Image 1 (cartoon, rainbow, N blue to C red):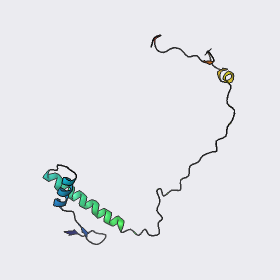
Image 2 (image 1 turned 30 degrees about the horizontal axis):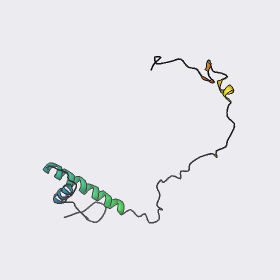
Image 3 (image 1 turned 45 degrees about the vertical axis):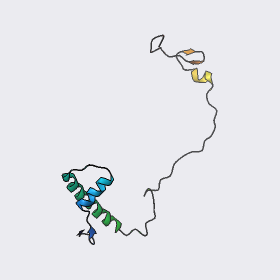
Length: 109
C-alpha cells in the first residue's frame, strides 16, 4: 500500500502486520488497539521523514551546530597566591593557622 503525501510522491505505508512484526522482534506485547495506533503514528513519522529527505541540501556543509561556537578561554598564568598570614588576616578567629568556625555537631560526632 502506498500513501500519497501533499508534498511529494507516494511513500510506502507501514502496515499493521509490519508493526506487529517489529513488536515481536522488540519483544513488546502490544494490544490490537496499540497496533492500530502505532501503525498510524509510524506511518506519519515515515511520511515526515520522506519530506525532510527531499529538501535540497547538497550545498549545506555538515555541521553539529549552525552557530559558530568557540570556546573563550584564557591562557593559564601562574601568579603568586596569598600567604597563610594574608589569607587569615581578616578572619574573626584563627586556630593552628586555619580558620576557626563554630562547631555545628556534637563533640563526638
